[in-house]
Structure formats: C-alpha cells, structure tokens
Image (cartoon, rainbow, N blue to C red; front, side, top):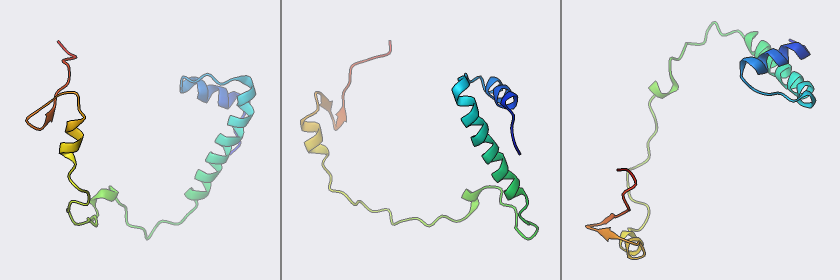
Length: 95
C-alpha cells in the first residue's frame, strides 16, 4: 500500500508529531514499507494455528534459584555516607 504525502501529514497530525517537510518523503517510504509487510503477513494461512492469548501462559523454563555472586554488602556499606542496621540512610526528600 502506497501512502501519499497527505496521508503521512494526516498520520503525523493524528500522532501529534511535527514532521519536517524534508522528512515526509522518508516517512512516506518507511510507512508504506511497513504496511506492505503487514499485507504480506496477512496473506499467510493461519487456519491450523491455535490462537495464543498470551505467551506468558506457557510454562517458563526457570533457572535454579541460587546465589551466583559473593555477598559484598559490608564492603559497600563501608563506603556509604550513612548506614544503620544494614540499611542505607538517605536525606528526607518529601515532607
């Protein structure tokens, strides 16, 4: 699908974007290519493909929950400006 110069200006306006005149031709070409790709994907036969509501509903392969790094909290807190009971103390920023 080929977009016209006016189409690109309308799309930019709807998206509340300012398209410079020198950018319109490039945008016209890029958006037309995107629409062509969507058209090609629309032609693919998906009759035997089961719909998937969400990819995260599939079982995830998880790694073992094990510490992989050495505990360096004490060395980090030694160089912190202020700590108490293992916590970093920061100035109050909201009154």
